[in-house]
Length: 110
Length: 114
Image 1 (cartoon, one colour):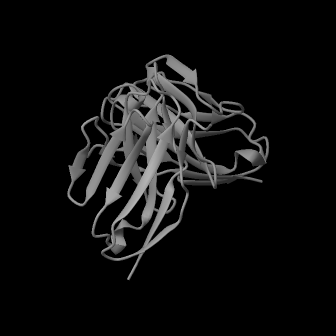
Image 2 (cartoon, helix red, strand yellow):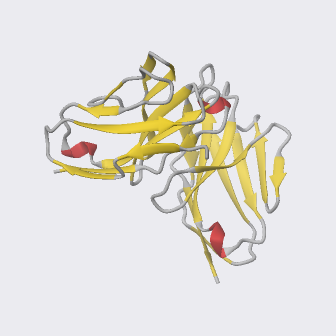
């Protein structure tokens, strides 16, 4: 099993739709979790951190399920500008080295 | 403005010709790292540095060298580039080690080795 796995997609959704991505991780000792956004061939940028209690930022909600070892990202009311690749990042248990998932591609169409 | 800069942004070179990609950050971050990104493989860490004079291998260090003589700079050195090192390279920094805090990425360097 890969350390961090994501469905590569693409997820093709209409504007206004709600879409959810999951990311599974293999190391149960992992402590820090993040979602990054990457536009085509540009640098990744932090979208949000994922806390044990879950967190919400506007239309975006991130949740952590330690028992099943996955994190999720929910995007409500999708906009055209949400089209991007979403990268899941998990730090390796016992170290501070981050592991990136391969990303999930989202395409929002009119 | 807080930023990570990389130079050059684009580079085409030939096999065996040594090259250096510079990375500099102005946020006084202790942690810096280099990644390469290839289609279908995602971001893979090449080397990282926890502080000045402290560097360690990531997942794909073969064919690369780094140095950390100053806190702000973390150059990536390809002593003898080969075509399989053709890739998009990102430098990143963070205030706490690795995944403990937000990583800030440079704009990327697109390298082609002929």
